[in-house]
Length: 382
Image 1 (cartoon, helix red, strand yellow):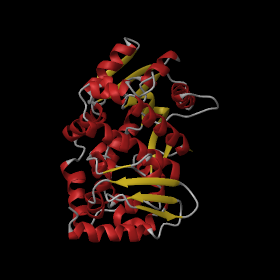
Image 2 (cartoon, one colour; image 1 turned 90 degrees about the horizontal axis):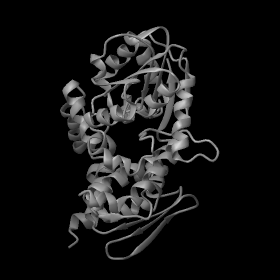
Image 3 (cartoon, one colour; image 1 turned 90 degrees about the vertical axis):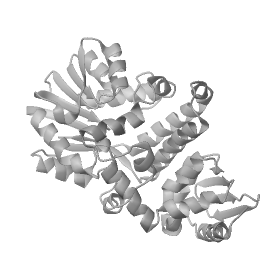
């Protein structure tokens, strides 16, 4: 039964959709009524199964939007397309894109205080995402087991594009042999570096990643179960690929101090990071979103300006920054398609539909975010 509150919020939602100016959105209501909104541009369709999906958006913004999808309250032929239209029309859909004031304060308390990335908290937060099973990731990542943006060249499939990304990073390092990799994942970069004759020390706080990387690499690389704040020694080069997003604002100074202290004189550090724009960062910093709340608890993105400022405080300087956000949109799109294709095997592993829907939602909203420029990815040289 549609409650009076749901009826009112539903009317407000449809009225907001009337203001869409970029792209087209078809909304199918629980009653089966079709509403078409918008003009020229990207096209999307959302089928609302229960008006509770809209009340969730009104209360919790994109977090409620994602939670409602995971709960099966709405569906779409393309989550990426729906998100793209929403991002292109944030000025008109803002009331349903951001959490209410009281929800936002509660979410901030959870994200910044209860999930802070202290050494113990970081281990807990990372395990929540990465220790869901190596077999799960192997079903939809490429054979290099790389979980970061690829760099596509003409004719590249995902595996070739991931190897291209690694070659670019290696080409930016100094001639010194020793490399510290902060956040080594399943060992994809370490494998590429060892093949080039480098001596790699990789650190991770995920036991399942460490076990996989050690089986894969053997003696040429040393893989440690270690927090970056505990690492000792100095290295000719440091590489950190999309690990900084999990550090959290409170610990950014510690992260950059680690880079400065562990890098030998004349060495080079390359940090691959997902970013938001300098203009958007103050707004982003004060809020929360589905990914920070559910996918990467305790995480937070930086902007280029913030990276430069934090590096400067640690005595480092940005020598170069290479942006390739469109490649991340393609990477996420490829992952989402591979995940969907692997759904029967993932269910056979005992995973629920809610688990699958949460991952599908996450990958597709990321594809939209990179495609629209809401987020970017950069390789920063220090």
